[in-house]
Length: 105
Image (cartoon, rainbow, N blue to C red):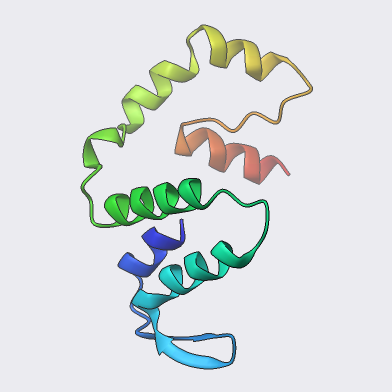
């Protein structure tokens, strides 16, 4: 998600480890820092950064689903079952249902 926020942000500079750097470099600096942390998966961090950047640059626009499709999927089997089970905190795909649930609280 950091890749998406960097691509879509209007902020041009960021403060990282006490240094002012261009915001485009922030994910890459954190990726280098993750290389030094033991027992972290560097490959998964690289893949996550790549996907975030691709999504931020709208290369993954075909994965975004419309509101109508999200409503239809909410009514299908796995999602309707998850809504009934109290263990899960189910968040609906419909923005209208999310607003209604937020207003109830």
